[in-house]
Amino acid sequence: MAAPPGFEEFVTFRSARLLRAAFQLTHDWALAEDLMQTALAKTWRAWSRLSGENDPEPYVRKIMFNTYATWWHRRWNHENPTDTMPDRSDALRPLGQIDDRDEVWRAIGRLPKRQRAAIVLRYFEDLTEAQTAEILDCSIGNVKSLTSRALASLRLDAAFRSEGASA
Image (cartoon, rainbow, N blue to C red; front, side, top):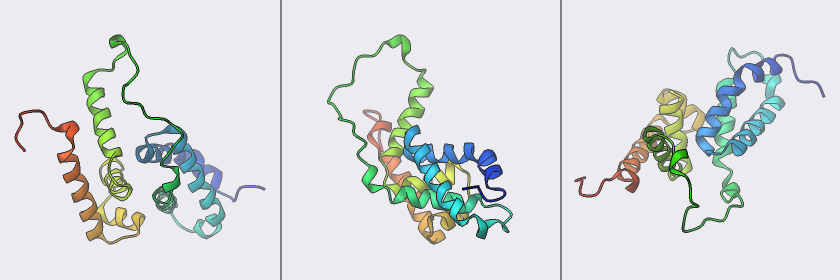
């Protein structure tokens, strides 16, 4: 079955940005690719309705973020956690700045899905509150509440609290 006119160009030029946003949500490249492909497949079916719009990317992002929010059954991805980390060489250890960035992503990963989506959209995708509300299908006030609660949780996250520091 042939792709609708303009769809292939859209995928070619926008898939890198969409994949980055999907990765920021899932923290797993394979899941991010699955999420992006699912969103693009849903978009393909609706492309004839979108062909008159100037920019169909917000529609695709909305599909992607809503699909991510419904993937509760994918939470377990066939990994068995252990109490101890495997040995790793200090020579291969990333720089401190990269370690800090990794800790931030791990903390964001511990947030509830809607809060994580709000943080990614507002601060990593640099969308406005109104754009974020449209994608998450909620009010601007709800976006403010989600981001406020997410930032409060991040401030209280044990990974960022040094011993002996006051709150």
